[in-house]
Image (cartoon, rainbow, N blue to C red; front, side, top):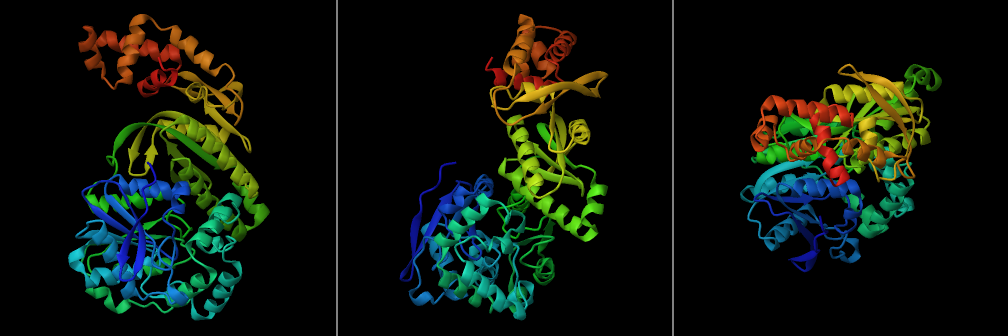
Length: 515
């Protein structure tokens, strides 16, 4: 998606920077948290994914509050009241031609969104609240901790040091810290940032919650490091008819971790439908990551420290998987899974997971397999997942094992593969397994797949082409004037010759080879 043009709406004497994304029939306004910058946010892969996900089903407006980002600065850093911020939202909606909209209030943007919904119900189609609160004390900080937090902000603003308060799983990621430092500097001055904290510390909109009469969805991460999960639960109890969804994760930032889980909840709430059927068979590449000898690690680190390291590993893994356009899910504290729509991104993600884990002293091993799986909401299940898991458990520390079909479908990607050994069985066949590297050409990969493809008969190539177009056996039989039994025999021969486990993997061969 091309980065949209930044425009300006006039709110009184101030200009408010905003962007319009998407062309859906539903209008949504994203009310930012502490600080924002509508241009720089596109540089972060998780932020971009979140915006594109929402813009896929709605017309989305993002903006910078007055005094922050690309909007007009406030003279003397006299930051605006919640009422003035409501005026800014109305100005942006008017400029974008929105009579009413769904408001998504993120963190500090939540209280203003609640006030807006209660004051202007005719302009609020629905309300979504993420990681937010009705009162700053004690949901964000108790009063005794405020002075220390302000001191840290004054002395560290613009360095990225504050990232630990918002996304602790990424606080050791040098690239993220560097980007966050620039994001801070381009979103507010140090004086404005401290003024924002002081003003936010006075927020308490608890008394108006019963006045909110619009459909409301509340999203909160269970282990949110910035805003207590009890705040989200209290909002759900206080707003009549509110729907509450508690998500996995520790990071407070809504564009880190599994952003798909957030946008899927929003899409279902706003449209009544999730991005895909809740139960469907899809072709996916699955990465399974398993901690090597977790018992030994628990003994080494001690129970409390090991629990902390595991929690941080899970959060960082969600960020890595999301950054590689995958969807994370979990089955235990020692196993992490992600599914992808392409094998190259999956293998690259597996390598990134290993590098991250090694940097934090956690031994991890990965397995990657592609095949059909049952998709339900954000999770996939079935033989494909189990094979990836078996590979991970068979791997050694810092090793990625992939099945032969993954190797063949990543030709020309720059990935390299080493020793071949057979460790798995499927449908009474042994599955060739390879160790993946991260650089250099794929040794004999393209040649191997093309040799296999060349071994197909002309009729088998014709059938394979029709499989790649999504035709069923019955449809292929009708198209080629063959019996369905004959088509089944051709499909079986194709899978055998290409050394593939299912027709979905076979369908990918055509696009891979450009045949």
